[in-house]
Image 1 (cartoon, one colour):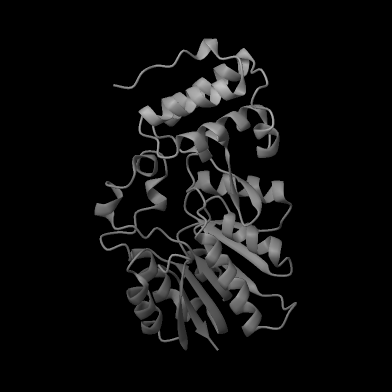
Image 2 (cartoon, rainbow, N blue to C red):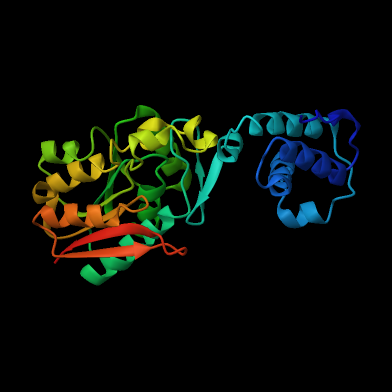
Length: 296
C-alpha cells in the first residue's frame, strides 16, 4: 500500500528528490527519479546543471507545495507534458494542453523525410504549396514553415481546440501558416486548390485498441486524434482517394503510420493511381514509421 510522504519536513533539494521519487515509485511510475527531477526543475525553472550542483541547497515551502501537487497529478497518470504545458519537437518548444495530441519524437522522422525528399524533387527556393492534414499542436506545419519559410503552408483540423493551440504556437514561434477548419482535404477540394506536398500524421490506432492504451494516453489525450477506425486505416483511405484531385503533376505524399501498417498504406497509395514510387522509412528501432508516395 503506497504511503503518503510528509512533504512538510524537507529542507534540501536532495531530500525533496528522494521523497518525490519514492512517492512516484510506490505508485508505479516507471522512471521515478528522472520524473521527480523534472518536476523540481520545472518548479524552480532551472536547467539540469544548476540542479545537480545545488542538491544541498534549501528548498522553500512554496516549492515543496508545488512539487507535492505535481506528484499527486502524476500518480493519476496525467502526462508530464500537460502538467508542464510544453513539449520539445525538432528543437522547438510547443505549447500542449488537453485537446491536442502530445508531439512524439518519431514524428520528427516524418518532418525529416519531407525535407529530404522535397530537396530531391524540387530545386532550392521553389515556392511549394504544402498541406499538413490534422494540425494538432501545429508541430508538423510550424516546423516545416520554420525550416522552409519560402513554402506556402496550410493546415487543416476538425477540432477548434487544436486549431487554437496551433495558432498560439505559430505566433510564439513567429511563422506564417494558413489555418483551415474542416474535414481532411475538403477545404482544398472546395477551393479547387492543388498541392505539391501533402503530409499527415492521422489517427491510426484501431478503435478496439484505443481502450487498452496506457492510461495516460487513453484518459488524457483526445480520442479524436487517436482512433483510426476499425482497422486504423480509415483516414489513409480517405486521403488516398482524394489524391487524384488534389495533387499537382509532381508531388510528394508523406504519412506517419502505426506498427504493421506500412504494407496496407503503401497499397492504398499505389491504388490511388497517381503515385509512381512508394518508400517506407523505419525509425531507429527498425519499426516502419513513415510511408512516402512520390509523383514524378
